[in-house]
View 1: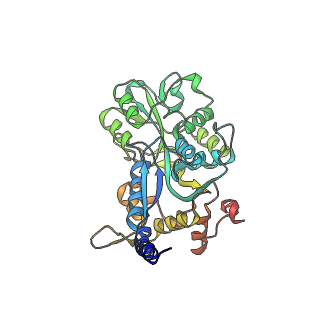
View 2: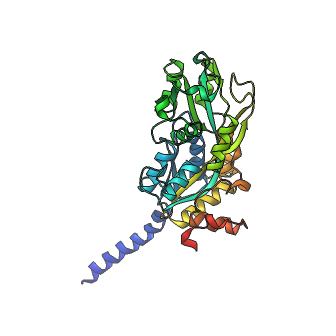
View 3: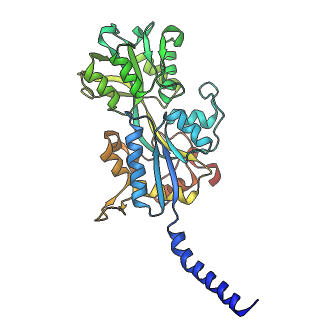
Length: 345
């Protein structure tokens, strides 16, 4: 090799090394959060969380994806099409255990949790003119049960089962938020069944434009649901949570949790969990104000105010991801044995 050629190659190598440092430092990692439909709670809360993480972790770009919520989100995660998503805790448990009665797609043994988020309340709303006075009057009626395979539809089947009914006893309508609003407004449905955080904008829109009644769950139905499925917790929706809802409504609630796959990088999940709970500088704001992901979710939606560190494991039904487990251990949280990741045992 001539001295001239050696010199040229050396210069190229030096220049490559000189520029590789900054280039590598700017290399972005990507992380997705599957949420729900526009008009629900998952979408604004998930969007705020994605913005918070992108704004506080220098090399991470986080995107929130709209979609069909719990069941669809878990299936996307299982196929590696998105890194994480929001799901009802009962749906996550059914997927993780492969409960054949409830989970119709392949078992997701690698499903892991990051944190509990907020309670989701079961709403049963009927048009006043449909003459439905109690949940038992839904027999023979046109009932919106959510999109096929959604968390809401998952709950609807169990709700009807607890009353001794099934889809054969009524006309189920499989539609999502925007279409559900339109069906109720056009009186192409008699009632709506929906699991979501209070308040949900779709039901506000329906109650604002139509005369509706909010149906309480009968006590015996609540008891049956809670006895068979402990994650259905008896709750009371406060009066005036919605227009035309003057009185409290007895119902049940489950928890929305943030889930991922065991295969997602441990360090990334550790960082994400840290930034969910701890105040960090907002990199793209002029004054670099401190904020946590939880605080930004609280600013985005009423349910975001329920995302609290002291409730991080409340209602979590599947093992934690190893990265989240590491964070909670460092913070001195006593993690129940059932939530310790198999990879950490």
